[in-house]
Every structure is written in C-alpha cells, then in structure tokens.
Length: 267
Image 1 (cartoon, helix red, strand yellow):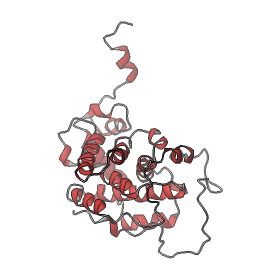
Image 2 (cartoon, one colour):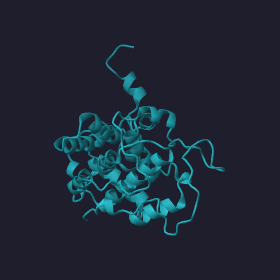
Image 3 (cartoon, helix red, strand yellow):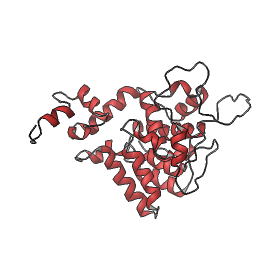
Image 4 (cartoon, one colour):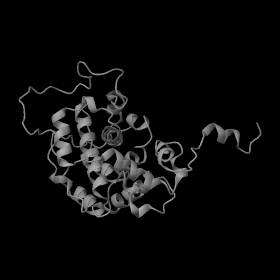
C-alpha cells in the first residue's frame, strides 16, 4: 500500500454538516458532566505554555496538516515503508495531537509535530526487524538523519526526536514542549482512548472517515508484537512490556526489584 499524502486530509474541524456556533477561546477546562477524576492525558497548560520553543511557531487555526516541502518529503520518505495500519494511525496521531494543542491554546510548530507523528512508529516496520535497540530510537535515528539532511536546526530537530523517543513513557512528555507532548497526546487518544470523551464527535467522525481504523485494536497489538518480539529486553521500563507479556510465549517480564536484589553488589 502506498501511503496517501497527508496534506489532502480534510480538516478535522470541518464537520460533514457544520452547525453554527459562537467561537470562544479555549480554556482547557473539562466540559460539564465530564467524568472525574480528570483524564490523565489532559495536558496541563501551566507546564506546556512555559515550555514553548524560543522560535516563534506557526499557530494552526483549524487548517489540515502542513502542505510544505518538509512535510511532502517526509511523507515520500516513508510512504512505501509503512503499511496502511501505521499510515493511518500516524495521521490520526497528528490530527488528534493538533486538535488537543488548539483546544488548550498551545503554540506549536505543525511541521515538527507532523514529522514526529509520521516517524513515531517507524521502528515497528520490517526495515528494523534485526534492530536490537528500542524501537522508539529507530524512529529518532531516522528522523535525525532526515531533518539534518535538510538543514533543520538542532534545537528544532531535538523536539521531533524527543516526541518520538518518549511517546511510550507515561506522564513525562506532558511536561515538555508542545511538539513533544502532543505526539504522546495523539498516541494516547488513538491507541488507548484517553481523551475520547472530550473529543467532539464531529471531529472524530471526520478524522476516522479520512483515516479509517478497521479492527484497529487487534491489528495494532499485532504490529507491536511483531516489532518487539526479537528484542524483548528493550521493553523494560516502558509500556511495551505488557505487549510481550500478553502475546509472547515464554516471555518473562523483567522485575526492577529482582534486578537490584540479584546485582553483584553486596547487600
């Protein structure tokens, strides 16, 4: 499958049958009647707004993903490497992450968020079936090479790499710059359903219509398993250990306490 160009994706803020409403500035508050305690994926604007990059970024205002040279080249680079499952998942991660950023009135660079979302699962693909490092690092290495070759400044490239590297490490990304935090927010919404109740139904419908998710739960778990089974040690300390514990016969989950107790140091 040749992954379609993302810049043709309809805006998730354009509903099939728009309803007139009076726009109001985002407040980041939970809507009336929302479940409590607060969703753990809800970004804390107090942290994110103080962590904006020094560069003045472009603040998106309801438009689809960036139609820029960098975005086109990023898509061309990976469109024949990833399958339709990862293709559509990565695009939803961008769209959901961008929506979350706009909802909280966060200033972020859509190009950097786009590249981070596009590369974040690259390490799960067949190209890396012999890799022995964490799959997140496979993605960061590819992103670094891609951005460096195009003269992207180191400080900007670092935001992309951190967004990819940390998206399986709970909580930490949400205290980092928006380009990092919003990759995780998009992943958590699309894979775990965190934030589902606060996502407007019309936004969800438009995004899923453009980037379908048939049998997604089963298929993404299979993709995780296939990308990690040959390197089980790399799942220690992150959420992917749960995948091998469920699907890999004979897998023994590393235990942090046991590692300490069995270390060569005297008591």
